[in-house]
Length: 140
Length: 66
Image (cartoon, each protein chain N blue to C red):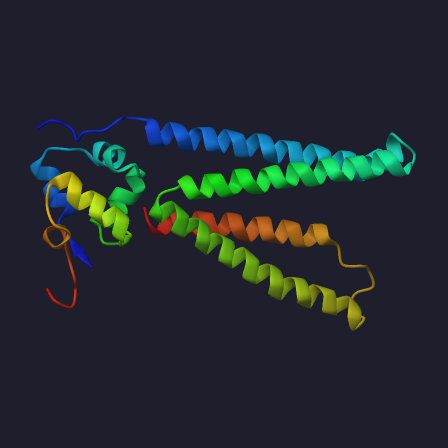
């Protein structure tokens, strides 16, 4: 029997484009973040105007990344969206619970150093990756 | 929810990949629906029924009723 009536590759091409676009925005955001973080010390000696411009550029790239992510999610199919939702929910829950406990550690003097936001970002990334992995395994 | 997706697909000699292309979903999604691990949304269920020229009830059956 004939294969179903389709326009092969349309949907997969769109997903591929979305992923590439998301990759570019992620890269732009990382580069502008590095510029805003290290520029003051190594390039413009803490001058105000370049600092503000770098920060605005980073915010703009961040907005671009958010919209690219939204577009990517909206083009996923039902199951892929469900997997993403579960992974996001896991990482958000862990971030809130672990983040507040981590902050408390310093407040009640159980640690002597200042809690770093980067530690929380690493935890969020790790739990999100675990969520995606287990989600994909579950529905294989 | 039970479904006859695998049988209907086999009757037409379609592969999971061909069906996934027609429905604009991943092959993983077709497989998850066929094995009962995932229930599709109403729009996707309608799309599946339309593709096979059947009603939704002819493709999907409620576990409680069947």
